[in-house]
Image 1 (spheres, rainbow over the protein chains, first blue to last red):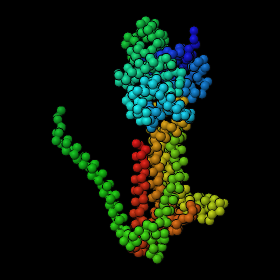
Image 2 (cartoon, rainbow over the protein chains, first blue to last red; image 1 turned 180 degrees about the vertical axis):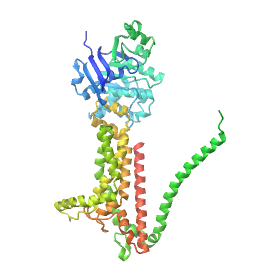
Image 3 (cartoon, one colour; image 1 turned 180 degrees about the horizontal axis):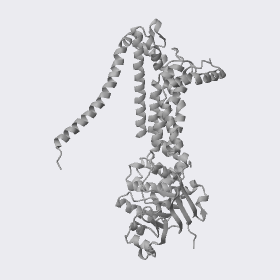
Image 4 (cartoon, chains in turn blue, red; image 1 turned 30 degrees about the vertical axis):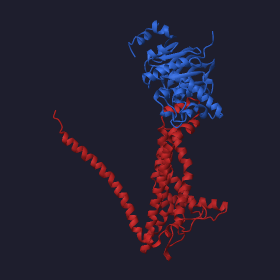
Length: 252
Length: 296
C-alpha cells in the first residue's frame, strides 16, 4: 500500500494551558478529500492550522507530537517551506485588496521574492485560474482588483492563489461558510476536480457537505479524534455513539 | 404605559441636529474669522510691499525693508529636514508597536513614552537643545569643517524631528494594528516571512494612513515656534547650507513681535503669519490629494 501523504502521530496542540487538540493520530492518503467535522470548539480548525504550522503564529500557541508530510516531520522543516508545500484557504475570502486578480494569483511568488518571467507568470496565472474554475469569468479583467469579484469568485481566486504555489496538500478551513448556496455548490464541484492533482483536507461544520465532498471523514469532539473512516461507512454505520449522536443531530 | 408624544420627540430630534449643525458651523466661522483677521491686519503690508514681500530676500526692519523669502526657505528647510530625520524612527516605532509587539508591558510603556514626547512643552525641548544638542552639533561642525555655530537649521531640525515623531508613530501604529488578521494569515499561508508580510501586505494596506500621520507631523513641524526659535540662530539671511543659522516664519514672529514699533513692521509680521497659514493649507491640500491617489 502507498504510504500516506500526511501522517499525524499522537499530535497535541495548546493555547497556553488550554489543551485543544488531544493526541490525534490519523493518516491521510494521497489524492483524497478528507473532511474534518465536529461541533464548534472541537479543535478541528486548530488541528488544520497545525498541519501547515499556522497555529504557532498565535502568541502562546504550542504543539507536541509529529505531523509527517511524505514521512518527514513538518516540525523539523522551515515553517516557510511547509506553508509553500501545504496551501491554505480560509473561512472568509481574503484576496489582497491592493493587488489585481493577476497579481493575487501569483502573490505567493511575489511574497517569497521568486522572480518569474512574463511568460512564466502568464502560464501560472492561466493554469491556476483554470484549475480553480475561475478563468472563464475573469480572463478579460485580469488587471482589475480582486476585491471587485463576488464572494464565491473571491474564494476561487484564493484557491487559485494557493494552488499556484503547486502545493501537495490544500487545507480548506470552512471555505464555504461565508458563501451563498450557489457559490458553495460551485466550490464543492471544484473540490472534485482538484482532487486529481492535490490532496484536500477540508474543515466543515456542515455534515451534508462532508458527506457530499469527502472520501474519508474525521469526527472531532472536545479535542479528540473520535472516529476516522471512509465517509460512507461513517455516515451509514458509525461505531462510536458520539459520532452517531452528532450525525443524527442530537447535539451540534 | 403612556405613549410618548411623537410631536415632542420630533422636536427634540430637530433641536439635537440643529445644535450639531450650529457647533460645526462655529468651527467654520472661527477659521474664516481667523483668516480674515490676518488678511485685514496685513493689508497695509500687502498694499505697501506687494509681491516684493514674498520674493524679497532682505528683511531689515530698521530700513523698513521686509522680504519674507529667507523665512519661507527656513521654514520649509527645517520642516522637511525634520521629516526626513523622523520618518525612519516613527515608522519603525509604528511597525514595532502595531505588528511585532501590540500588547504587553513593554509596548504599553513605549506607547506612554511616545505620548509623553508629544506632551512635553516645546520650551523644554528648546532648553534641552541649547544645553545638550548645540554643543554636540558644534563639535560635529568643527570636525567636518563648517563654521561651528552649534545653533542653526540643522539643530532646529533635529529638535523638530524628535518633537514630531509621536504624531506619525501613533497614527501609524493604529493603522497597522487594524490590518485584518485574515490578510496577514493569507500571506503567511503562502510562505511569507514576517518581513515579507510587512512589506507586501501591511504597508500597502496602510500606506494612506501612514502618509496621513507623516502629514500630521509635517503640519506640526511647520508651525512649531518656541523650540525652533531657541536653537535656530535667528538670522534673517537666506541659509546657504543646513548648518547655517536661519529663521522660520514662526520664529521671526515670536522673536520680533514685541519689538515691532511701526505699523508697517507689525503688519509685515502678521502677513508672515498669514503666509505660514497658507503654506500649511497648501501642503495639507497636496497631502490629501496624494492620499486620495493612494486609495483609488
